View (cartoon, each protein chain N blue to C red):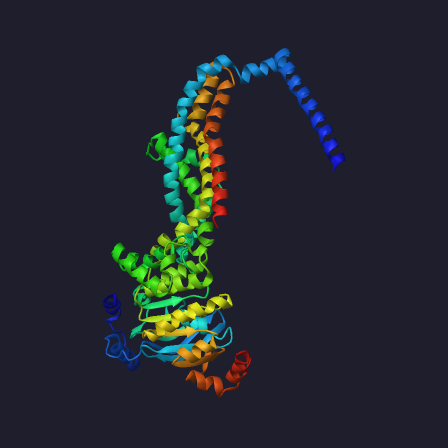
Length: 258
Length: 276
């Protein structure tokens, strides 16, 4: 016990010294050596930061709008596909499985290009925002359908039977008995999907949507400097870090409630 | 709701005598029996769980169904309210053949309550909301009216003070009594009880049986699958003993207890009654 305490102290001192040494080395490296100075200048250039940050930050509202609007459609479409996936009708089940597998087997970037440029070739010139939301919905609905399905299947079948035995129809029983319980279970995974979705809106920069990443790359080209990308990183983190904490909190609370 | 079910069944297809007999029933001319099961077979894959069950239950009768596990008792109950589809045979509930796919099974189920071994209360709703849900959503009953009725039913099962408790905060016996109240809220003509005390701690069995006795006294038609032989003797008007998917013996409970005719029934009762 006593010996343990003493060793702990020794490790503490050694650790602190090591950390201090590392910090000192980094400071010297970045401020005195040429390579270090270049790094700071490229990534954390105060001047560029001041000039580009407001422009990049303005893209954040579009990024959030894309994510939120898409999420609404994703939840609706995902739930419908999940219902088809567990339907008694074999046709619906097969169609749902094909959709889910095909979509999940393709890169999102490719789906975005297909929706935007592919439809343009057919003569449908979609607004980039609409095309972006459509592409994200098509892709994420497949993933969230599987989450919904798992949530619904996690509810004991006795719940459906009890509801049906009271005279409720299948959809009534789903809506009032099974789904309220299932949704509770899938809130954490769905929130994680939302965070992923928010980050994936960056891919929409390829169809000229002036969201965060697009604006950052524009500024990078303008100032020949990487700092705007750091601005973009900060923009995403402003949203995602609190969200991740929130998901963690929700997960804890929901599992504690059982 | 009866009318809706009747309309669906109105057109008759063939001219077979059996169907004509069915037609009489469908028009409500023969309501002598609450439940009539005719040559019911049920297979799960290659496994035949029910091998031709025939059964008639009169209104206000309490029929107790006993038998070893796997004898098809639960499956029989589940067929009677359509949770399982009969492989062949007919099941008439108040004259309506529920094996006919044109019958609106939801309408029939409102008349047939079932209480499960595992309670199956809705855990996201309070006791009161559990009872109210079906009357409001299925019967479109006015919310205030439904609530008043639900409170009366909870009173009847002795749980009015637990109206706002969630199932997780109720004991097994209390949950099962709420489940009974929930079924009664739809004003069923027939109640099915599927081993409702089997999952309960011994000291909680009585409170549930008392509710069921009260219900039997009030004239409810009941089909009760149970291992509670005391209840069967006291409340049961008739008892059927099932084994391997068929009804082996049928009669007054005490007579079957004391003088089982078939070897299978004798064997079964000697095993369970020795504990009494």
